[in-house]
Length: 354
Image 1 (cartoon, helix red, strand yellow):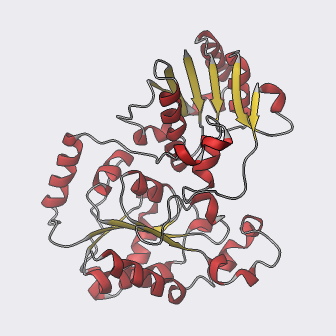
Image 2 (tube, helix red, strand yellow):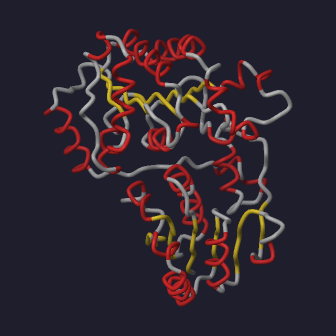
C-alpha cells in the first residue's frame, strides 16, 4: 500500500501533521508513506521514522505552471492507494486529483468535497488537552470514537552526534548546565504575532530575576535588528545573562541547541511547537488574534502554560472571535502588557523549580 500525506504550510503545521504519518504507520504497518511538504520545512522531519520519503514542494512549482504540471505527472506515476490532504488548498486539491488514488481524504469544504472520497468535518471544541490542531488531524485517520485513545504528540528526532556537536558549541561559548538555559522566542513570524518590544524586554527581565539563567534569543539573520532592539530595552543586569550572538545559523542548528535548553518562553509559533516536540517545557504568549484552543497543545498549567488577552479581557473582543480581530492585533497587543503576563510567568517559573 502506498500513502501520500500532504501538508504544504509553515513549520509548525508540518511538524504537527507528522502525527498523521505516525497514526497511518500504526494502522498500516506495511505501507509506504510519503510526506509532501514545502522544502523550507524539511529540517523538522530528519530522522523521523514514521514515513519513508519526504517529497519536496519547491518554490518553482508555484512560479511555473509547466514545472507544477510536471510535478503532478510524477505524482500520478507513483500510483498512490490513499492520499491524506491536510492542507486543503488549491495546490493540494490538484495534487490529490492528479494522484488518481482510489481513496482520498481531506477536510470538508463545500467547493472541493467532490474531489475526495471522504471528507472530515473539523470540530470547534477540543475533547482533550491535545488541542484542536492535534485532534482534527487525527480525525483524518481515526473515527471519532477512537480519537481520545489515540492522541499522538509530534516529535523531533535528533542523532547523538547532533546533540554532542551542539553541546560543544554551547560549551565553547561559556554556556554549561550549571545554570538554567532558557530559549526566548523573541519575535513572531510577523508583527501581528509579536509581543511589543518593550513588553518582551520586561518579560525577559523577569525571567532573569526569577531564574538567574542563561538566555538565548531565537531569531533569524533578517530579524537581528529587531532582536537587538529588544535586547537594548532589557536592563544591564539582564544583558549580562543574554548570549545574543549564540544562535543556530540554520533551522536544524536551532533545534539541536533547543534540545539542551531547560525551557522555551515567548511568542506562539513554530519555535514553541518544536520545543514541545523535543519534550521541553513552554510558556507561550499568544497573539491576541490567534485562537488559543487551536494551538495550545498539551497545555496543563504545569509543564506547558500560556497567556492570551482573551482569557483576561474578553470584553475587548465584544461578540467577535480573536481571529475576526486579526486586523486589530497591534491595537489589542497594547492591552497585553507585561504587568498582565509577569505574575503568571513568575508563578510558572517558580513551580518548574529551574
